[in-house]
Length: 345
Image (tube, rainbow, N blue to C red; front, side):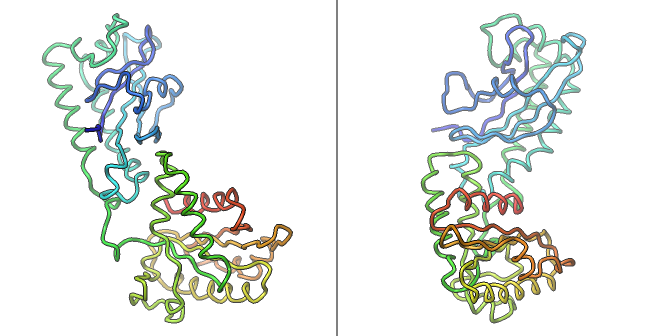
């Protein structure tokens, strides 16, 4: 059975370069695992970052250990927690934020290692270039026991599935609502991004995982939800109301004046309801002007004036406009989606 969760500690050896100090799995000669040594070889800045490689997603914390044995007086180390995200789709709703939330645990683990007696001495006494993994054997029994207890304790903590990233019932999930005038391209937009996600499914990177989560949470807003002024009843096809919204995508036809007017009216209703609600997080509203031909254009200034965006001062929203030919311009569609995703994660 494939390994689903892995914890490793790497360090930079002054003789052999990047090396593994201890890992709960054998990673050498495994093409499906990230090359932790290569990551450490090209990054020496302290901090935490997320890295995706094939089937595994990793959160990595780089830190320094004060040392009288190391060149320059410091050892460079990295703690890496890896998961095979596909095995947790039924449990974790947002892989990126789940990994990001592990940062405080990694920082605490690093702090414990910095205080671990004899750690630096053991790191610097390795002279065997063939000895590539699990170097705790270089320490005495007291060190080995203390290190393993510490390692196992933090690995158990990292593996705990808890927090807001666990999947909830359908009615509890936050939604991304697509709305706008009739025949503006709402269904086309949704079908196109579903096709983009399908064609990129062999890419197990975090970007693909995030796009998949966002698409799964998208719904085209039903008219009665707008007509009912978002009083938060459950609407037809299980639409959620303002307090269940993670964001909104408004689409209108740039070549149809009535489409712009209809979009404006819907926009006013939604913004008014957001302003009258207590919202926990800023809600992004992506406005897409669907260009059915390439020569058509509605400028950002016209959109700002039409939708009176500059007058929305007291509402906790962030708004961006993208003119896009939804039928043919996947590159521009992805650019708009990236802006939207950055503002909901």
